[in-house]
Length: 175
Image (cartoon, rainbow, N blue to C red; front, side, top):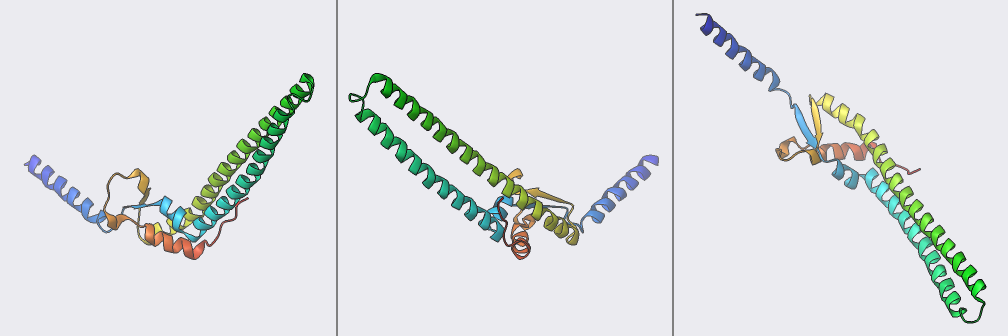
């Protein structure tokens, strides 16, 4: 008798808990890469980074051409100048080349840091939008799509969030 009562209560509690949670969309996912690449703010970040990259490329191409020209001049003067003078010019050219490589690496690192900072800024601005959306739609968990192996497409809220982000965030300026 006690076992039957226990089983009846157990089944009742299990079925009650499923009914109480069924009205919530408890877990959804979002594609943050799509938000970053297709939103107006994300596109502005991308264009700013591309402009900075193009400026750096043209700047370093000019420096590289100057170094090649200096190298050719030094090679042409090899038999004309003394060996000590030639060595001084070679050492000077190597120092300039090392300085060029350092500036180029610093520029690349700076661009990568700008990209990371812009991504962090974008995520910081999107987070309150996601919070508000989850409160309005009774969502208890939002997961990034890259961490999901398989999921129903009806649980994807990316397009909804993309529309809201485009309304609220139009541009993000890089530092």
